Image (tube, rainbow, N blue to C red; front, side):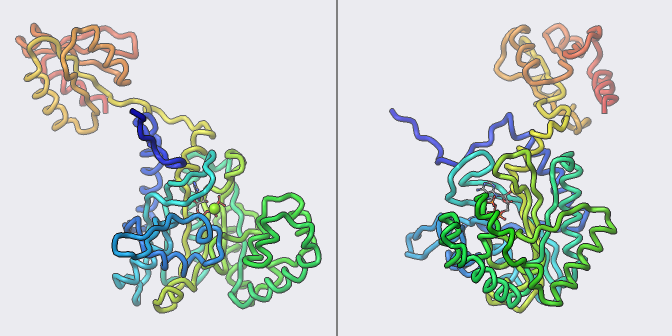
Length: 423
Ligand code: ATP
Ligand code: MG
């Protein structure tokens, strides 16, 4: 029979990879807690309308990347392509934005029908951060410091660069759009096909075209930063001052725009040259208009999303040394003969008294040789050996699997004391 396979671009995360993922997720969520951010969880499926109204009808995501389907009631639903819109929906619905500030994060799968390649998948995972209710550039700086710390504590700082820009107010962007379109209309025939199409639909996106010729044409184009409204200019200056004072290096990239319509004022990306074309590891910005756009009261907001697959790939590419990550257990209990009952009780006692030890008990029998093979494969440093003779005397043998040290035989109590001294 033909075997059923996973959907293209949707990956399994295998046991061999999950320790690295857990490590990365652990570092990130730990840092989030240290900054006072709280977790929020919301569904993977939402009304299609939510994404159309927030991300924008003429964006790549809504035009061609969403997994949209009709459910049995005939309602149009969509697997979430990103988390910001969902987060806003959940906060509004549960009254989290009224007269208060929020610092939130979430983690989970997102779905976009893109062409799968390294760093680009159809189901991928994001850790998202969203803050609500704070207007000034201080909170923009805070989320950037937070993202910088994540990258630093994961050891990938040398391989990433922060790019920032200001997208200005809606009115400023509209003025700029006019000037840009006027300029690009003159060189229209020389643009790449995608950009020609975007000239009609979403001209700002032409700024981050990957086409070299289009990029060259843009060298003489009007610059977004020259069109900023005063408020956005002051905000951007304030942010730069805060980043300078904090010693965060950045590059102002006046062509940085985001693929989602709701951003205004601050926009930023952490980019790397370690992952080929999929260079953006973390991206975000300010979206003061979104809450109102979705039916709430105007609420300032800023946040970002980290692509977890890309972050994990970057940690691997950076060859950060992570000890013990491929170790399944610290200790393996070899139990040979009619001793399984005693072995399992002993293991429970060790887990009670020494919770920091990861302990595997052999199950399924086998002779010494086959059990030691399993012990070795588990990555354990130490094997506790319980045979029928040892069990009778209330003792066990300690065997070192990774170092040249003599085997010792200890009573259960002494063995537990000795294991305790390993912490
Ligand atoms: P890109 O320009 O790479 O398509 P984007 O602007 O569409 O990214 P956002 O919507 O801002 O990305 O999502 C934030 C982050 O999520 C990205 O910076 C990236 O790290 C990650 N990401 C986005 N799409 C994918 C995908 N298809 N596969 C893996 N990671 C993704
Ligand atoms: Mg994209």
